[in-house]
Image (cartoon, rainbow, N blue to C red):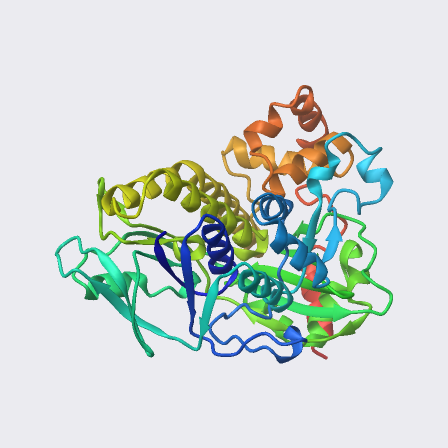
Length: 466
C-alpha cells in the first residue's frame, strides 16, 4: 500500500482520490479552503480557492458514463444530492430527434451546480475512506535534494510537513507546481500557453415549475456570440453568453437589464430567462488554453509527483469538458499505477506522461481546435469579415451542426462529439452520414439558428442601457 497525497479537493482531486482508495492506496487530500460543505452548499459554502465555484457548470454524458463505471457509489451520491437527470438528445422535440434508436441511452447524464456536485463527491469520498484535510495550504515540495531531477517525497504546508510516496497535483488552473519544482532545483515543465480569448456573462435562474422546455441544442452559436442554456439541480439552471474579450461593445452585458435585453432576442434561449434570477450577471475572463509537460525529451523534470486534470491542461470552459478531462485522466493514473509501482518512480512518471499523451492529449488538442476556430469566427463577426478558413475539418464541423438541426442521424453524430463520446473521425465513418451532412450542411447559413444579426444585437444592447 502506498501513501498518496493529493493537492486539491475539487472534482479532479476527489475522483482521483476515490479511484486510488478503491485500489488500496492510502490517500490524503489537502485542501486550502477551510470550509466544509453544509446542508445547503449553494447558499452557505464558500470556496475562494476556486474562481469558477459559483459559475455555470454542465456535466457531459462522457463524465457520467465514466463516473458510473468507475465510481458507482459516487454516482449514486450525486444523483441523491438532487442532480438533474437529463439526456441532451431525448430532451429535444421529437421533430428534431426522430424516433428513439438503439444506443440513445449513451447520451444520458446528470448535472448540477458546482457546490452541489462537489459536496456530493466530498461526502462520497469520505464514505469511501478518503481523508480530506481542509484549511491546509501547501507552500512547497519536500525532495531528496537531488538536482536537476529531484524526487519529491512530500510537501510542506501551513500545518507542517506531509510525507508521501506520491504527490498528485489536482490544484486546477491556479496550480503552483511549476514554481515549487523550480524552487526545488528542477527544470520548469514545458508549457504551451495561449489566451483563450473568451469572456463569459452568466446568470443562474430557478422556477417552482422545473426546467424550461429544451427546444434546441444546449450550446448555440450565433453571429458574434454563443449562448449556453445549462440545466442544473433542484429546478435551477444557468444561461451563459460567450463572446470575445476583444468585443468592447458587449461589455455592457455586465448590466442585468442589458443582458436580458440581448438574450431575449434569441428565440431558442429567450424563454430560459423568463424566471426568477438567483444571481446577477457573473463575468469570467482572462482564461488560458494551457498544457504542461513534466517529461521533456524523455527525461522527467522530477519524479514522485504528477499532475492531473486542469493542473496538467486546461481549456475554454464553455465546452463543458473539464470534469470529463479530469475523470479520464484520473483513470489513466490509476491504471498506470496498477502497471508501475511508485517505488519505480522514474518509470512511473515516464509511463504516465506516455499514456497521458496517447489518451488525454488528443482530447485537449480537439478542444483547442474548436476554441481557436470559434474565437476567430467570433472576432471575424465583430470585424464584419466572415470567417471561412481553408480547413476542411472546421467546415465539416459547421456542416454537421447545420445538418443536425434537420437530420436525426446527424444530430446524434453532433451530440456524440459534443458529449465527448466519439471523435469526428468516428462519427463521419458512420455509413451514409458524410453524404447527408454535405447535402444538408454545406449550403446552410453560417448561423442556422434563428437569432439577430450583429447590428440587431447591438441595437438590443443599446436599448437595454437606456
